[in-house]
Image (cartoon, rainbow, N blue to C red; front, side, top):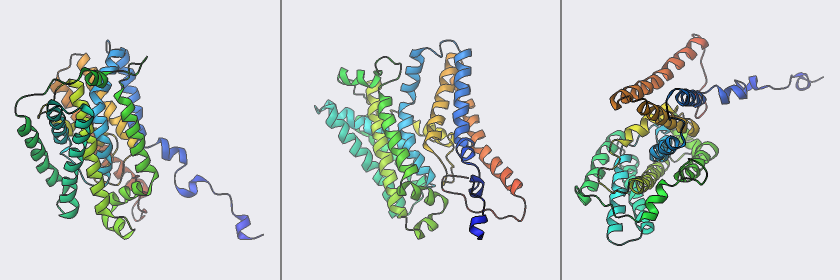
Length: 349
């Protein structure tokens, strides 16, 4: 009998952890589990939290964050960051309001606003990928630049004469449910981004860049083009979120969504994306956004002040970031000294 015939059949242990462990015992699934626990506790202990109207307003509140978090996830996985997203929301809001006030239909004005957002993202991408500047410095600068343009175009005034059909649509619900209609748009975007990130060569390139730009480049990944595309996507999706934000509140202002970028980044990091790049998943980010939204909504209904809510949210974010380092230290201790681990697979610790 040959050696090949004598070999035992391969099991998942030959390839590392069992499949169910690799799927369920992850940081992202831990956030999903925490989300379920927090929701159940809030529904049982906070008056009116489980009411359909509460669910509606909770989802309306987080819709813009959910949309912007999708491209932000991909950007942070590459090891970059985009702090200008909220300013692009404000700029697209002003473009939408100004063009609509000038007589253009919402459809045309909205399309122009998305193009402006994509151009803003391309500006970020140009300075980061062509000029070679760090994304933190570039997007801090464009955060001020785009916000200044938005405020400069509209001043201290606001455009509020939007067609009632569109403002009602932005706040409408799926018939027979408390779920806002805007969630349909988000689900389409989330599926598209999840497929791109987790099931395409482009997505594998994103993880490879986050693990090592040089190694990714030697593997044939066009690092600069990939990052440029991601920043353009971030600008376009932020503009789309700006259109929703404007129509939902029925007001186009230059200061719309001020500070929203911090909420987006906090939710992305809480959802398991590594700030150092190379790791993350769309479902974890969605759970992170919803977890922060549920906590904020429940605490407000419990008459907790906004300052305390910010403290709790900040503490949760710090804990999530610190836990990554603690888990990595525990893994190193379990491996033991003198044992060299192989490089992690893309998207995994």
